[in-house]
Length: 423
Image 1 (cartoon, helix red, strand yellow):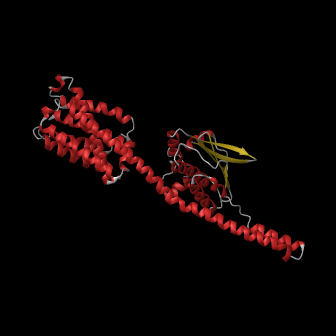
Image 2 (cartoon, rainbow, N blue to C red):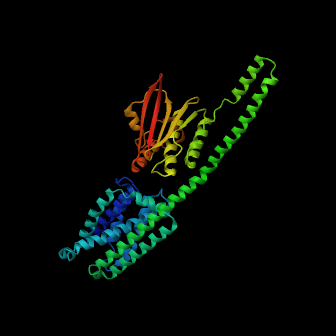
Image 3 (cartoon, one colour):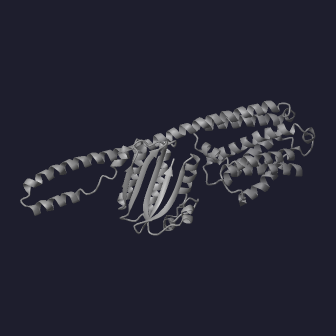
């Protein structure tokens, strides 16, 4: 029983390592993990070796229960697929470890072959977990139903193979090559389906963004049309002032009144030059939000055609993060300056907003650290964590071979915070 317990304990460690790696959690064990580390190996070790199939079924049940308990905040279906992904990954590694152990007959015939096998699986698991496989589970949790169905079928096939080997343990090493080839084909098939599923997800996301923001872009066009009508009407009225006003003072007063009422410039007009309607709609929506807070935004669009290897959806998200940060840093009456251009196949975006004091380079560096925020009052009021936007922006832009930076300058006695994005 001791050998069986150690074997089951090493197997639990493998499950634990991959579960934490897939969900990007700290490997420091919780009370649930410690309790499971004792109970699960104990349950599996008391099952006689003659009941291999029962051991497999009971093992799946207790591990699924453990995954649900260890990730209570996640959706139930995601926990199920987290277990399937972890189980199938370990099963593939176990088949590979069995191939390696087949080269050492002395180990296979040893009563400790289960311990050696799981120890080898654990050693092979550690390098894979260092590669941060959390992105794989993130893709699966966002995947469509067809891929999840394929993954579930893959799991059932692998479990069927394992059940066959449990009932015919002597066939493992004689059919190891066929098993590994089958497992490899299943893994590649799932990877291909997941790849195309992600492409479909990206297209659905882009379509959703267009559908959400195109009405905003249409409202920008309507605003310009209304402004043109207003301008034409006022121009006609100005033409009649010379005949309706009897003296110079009256004419002067009427002109001042008309021009004051129409003094608001069409600040969003440069956005119409952009060849990316989704981006234009996003910037226009943010400018409207700033206007409600009595914060002015001046757009300087140098290039009407914006070239970038980032998608329009990603570009809109990046600029939205920088714009929102600038708006939140401003007070009523402040003005934000936005410069947008394109050169050498890249889009350059610069945004300037006033700040009450000079910000050192060390503090600017902290802006891009995860969890760092200057919004202490906001965080205290709404109890929502802040400080991840710029950190996520930096990571995403860096992955796409772009650059993002910030600086603080003094001009005419005023301090300005400048963020630059090039991608």
